[in-house]
Structures are given as structure tokens and as C-alpha cells.
Image 1 (cartoon, rainbow, N blue to C red):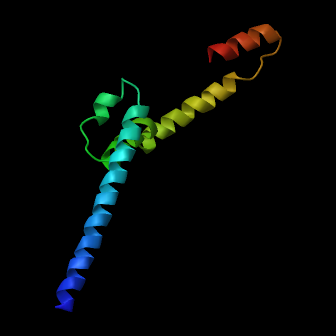
Image 2: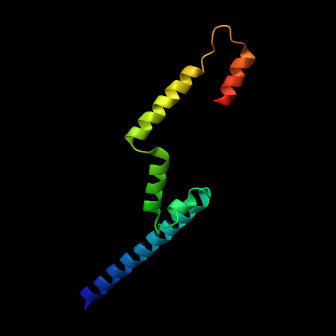
Length: 100
């Protein structure tokens, strides 16, 4: 008899833990969905849990290694353009920086 009650208690604890995890996941998903722009929301609205939603956002904004490499090259190029040229006035330089 005691074995059955111990098993029931164990299952009850598991159910409570599962319910808490589902609640936390739903809250996380809601926060992610509310924080995203209208442009991105359609891409994440299909998912019912936070993990695949987060994975989509990570891929969208971080990209794979090739994408990161290209972004880094662009940033390096932009950094090179931030140097003031010989004979360039400060106002022209600042205008150029605001355009970047």
C-alpha cells in the first residue's frame, strides 16, 4: 500500500513541476512575442513554445558563420571610413560619420 501512495506522490510532484514549466514557458513566449516588432512577429507566431521561437530569433539576428564573417568585414570597412582624411574639415568628417 505504501508503495502505491509513494508512486502517486511522485507522479503528483512530476505533474506539478510540468505545469510550472509550462507556465514559465508560456510567460517567456509571451514576453518574446510582445517584444518583437510587427515585421518579425509573423516569423515567430507559428511556434507554441519559447525554445523554437528563440532559435528563430537567434538565426535571424545572429546568422551562421558566413553571415557573421560578412558582417564583420563590413564593420571593419566602416571602421576604416571613420578615420579623418588629410585636409578634411571637422564638419565634413562629422557629417560623414552621421551618414554611417
